[in-house]
Length: 577
Image 1 (cartoon, rainbow, N blue to C red):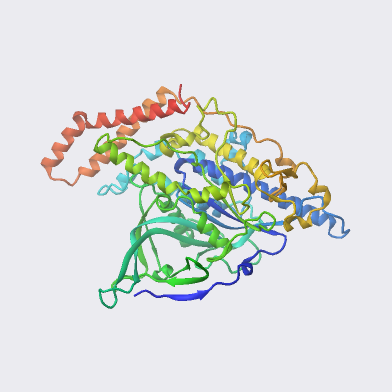
Image 2 (tube, rainbow, N blue to C red):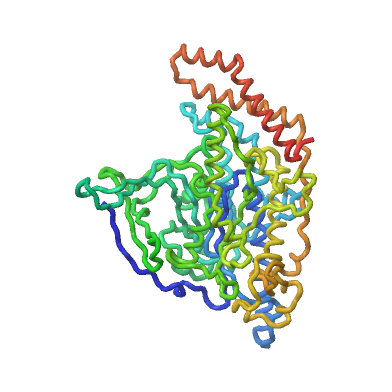
C-alpha cells in the first residue's frame, strides 16, 4: 500500500542564499571516454576559484585594519551540489577525494611534464591511467573464470578508482565549497523499485496501477571541507576525511560512481545495496507547486533490508542530471530565479556530447541493422533533453548555463569535429592518450572562455553591490551581452594570472597503421578469451561446434568489421591520415 503524506513546501525565499552569495550546482553529463573533457573543465574551474579566493584572502589581511576598499572583485560563490551521470559521476567522485587537498593544475605546459601532471588526480585518472590496452586484457576472466561480466575488462577501473580514493596532499580549505557538499550519481537500477498507485476502479479494494522505477540515483554528503558544517543534502551517505579506498563510505562512493559509468555490455555491472527507507521520497505534485507528496515503494513482504540491486550506466536513464542539481539548490518545489537582475543560483551543465548524432536509417535494412539502430536511438534519446538545453542556451535565462566542447573557428584540421573522444560513439578516446589529453586541455580552455565571456549576470544584480566602481567599469570584467546589449559582470572573475589564453590544443591526427594493427590483435585476443569463457560450461559437442564456427570465419569477420569501423571513423574525424 502506498504511503502518502502531503506536506506544504516552505516559501521559495526560505532557501535563498545569504546576500552577496551566488550558489552553483554542477551537472556532469555522461561522456564515456570524453570524461577527460569534463575533468579538464573541473580542473580549470577549481584553479580559477582557488586563485580568486587567495586574492580575496590576501586583500582582506592587507586591509583588515586600514579599512581601505578591496582591490579584488568581492562577493561569495558557493558550490552546493555536483550531480553526475556515467563518466560525469566518476569525475565527481575523483574530485570529491581531492577537494580537501592542494594539487597541481595541468595546462598545456604541465601536460608535457609527467611528474607534475600525475599529481593531478583527475588528469592522472582520465588521461594517463585509462587506456584501451588495459580494457582489452583478460584479468577479469582469470579472477572469475566461470562468468563473463562484460565485453571489456573492467579490472583497471577498480585500480583507477582505488588510486583516486587514496589521493592525499597538503590539506587546504576552499571557502567556496558548501559543507557538506552534496554528490548525486544517477543509476540504471536493473532490479527496479515497485510502486502502486491507488486508484478508484472496479477491481476491488487494494487495486491500483503498478509500476516499477529503474531510473535511480544515490546521494552522498561530503563533510570536513569547512570548519563548520551546515545541515544540507538530507539523506546523503556521510563521507568524511581522511579519504581512503579502505574506508567503507569511500569504497561505497567509488563503487556507486563505477556503477553509474558501467556502460551496458561493455563494462562490468555493479551490485549495490542501501536501506529500503531510502526510497521514501518526496515528490512535487504537478500543478500544485506549494505541496509535495511522500511516496513509498510497495516492497514484497519478504524483501530483505538492505535492498540489493544490480546497476548499469546511469546515463542510460538520466544522462544530464540537471533536475537533480536544481532540486538540491532550490528545494523540491522551489525555483531558481531566471531574471538576471534577481538570479542568485544556477545549474551549470558540463556536457561533452551536445552536437547532434548522425541520423539513423530511413528504410528497413534488415534485422541486425534495426537492432543496432534501436540501441543507438536509445542512447541518443537518453541524452536528448531539449527543454533543458533550451533553457541553458537562452540568453535571457540566468539560472542555467552550459559548457560544451568548442574549437571555435579552428576546426579545419579536425574535419569540423570539436572533441576527439566523439570517435566510436564516445569510446574512441580510450584508443590514444593524445586524444584524451586534447580533450582535457580543450575542457580547460572552454571553461576559461565560459567564465570570462558567458558566466555573467547583469551589473544591476545585487550580487555586485560589494564591488567598487573601479572594478564595475574594468574592461577585464565589464562587457555587454552581444544579444541583449545588457552590461554584465562575471560570477567568477578571473585573476590576472589566469587571464592569458589557455591555448587551443593541436588536433591529434597521427594515429598510425601500426597502432591500428596492434589494436586489432588486442581485440582478437580479448574476443578469444570472452568466447572461450562463454562456452566453457557447455556440453562437449556444442562447445566443439561453436569453436568450429568461431575459428572458421566468425571471429575474423567480426574483428575485420570492427577494424574497418574504427579506421573509417578515425579518418572521418581527421585523427588518422
